[in-house]
Amino acid sequence: MAHKTGSLPEMRRSWNLPIWIGFTIVLVALVSYIPIFVKYAATRDVPWVNYLLFAVGLAVLGIGLRRAYRDPQHYVGKTSGTILGALAVLLAGLFALGTVYLTKQIPSAELALHNGQRAPAFNLQTADGKSVALADLLNNHRGAVLIFYRGYW
Amino acid sequence: MNEFQTRNIAVAAISVDSPAESKKLCDAKGYTFPFLSDPKADVIRQYGVLHPKGGPDGHDIARPAEFLVDSAGVIRWANLTDDFRVRARPADVLRAIDKL
Image 1 (cartoon, rainbow over the protein chains, first blue to last red):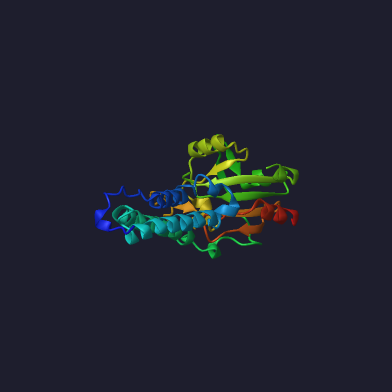
Image 2 (image 1 turned 90 degrees about the horizontal axis):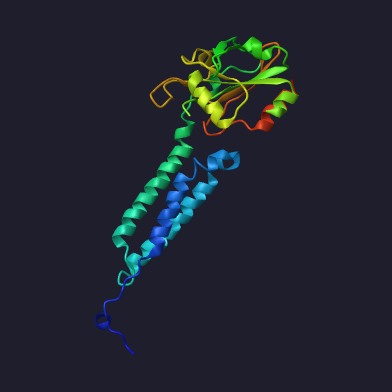
């Protein structure tokens, strides 16, 4: 039986789930880094899980978007998909920028003291308000590990 | 931490956080080693790990760095990464300690 597109009853267009699923995956890729993957060095130093999630999310979103453009009679999503697609690409780009470039914007390691140099003495307050000097740390110990960190947690 | 204790190595963390801020962090994470407050980043400067205006309000802060100091007060190992997300792995520090 020949179908004439004009004679078909108004078809319910599919919601085109891949667009929404893809975008959700991209959001998960973005927000999961700090609460989850930062905790493990294997996934923090190079956030490969997040990159993977971004890729999968963008691919799924792309599939949905393609369907919307190629078959708009059956699939909604040309507008919403395009907006979400652009947003997803932006988020992926920002994440990549943040993890590849921005977090390297710290002073050169060359400026720090090196092996063989004398560790400068200090006398600083602890969280409990006591005073601790480098000499105190070294007293009766084979050595001390000093961990400098950013602060502002 | 036990690994450091069995090797008789003291550990201390240093940042520009105030004692009150450090206390919150310590209590939250259950750290048992001292957290030292260097609010003006004076010590941070002396160790060459200043990150000028690197803090959220443009405050001077430290860039992440670890130093192993021997009992004579000499630096025997310094670990600085190029990326503030990357930290020293415990195994690296322990290896350096065992070479003291």
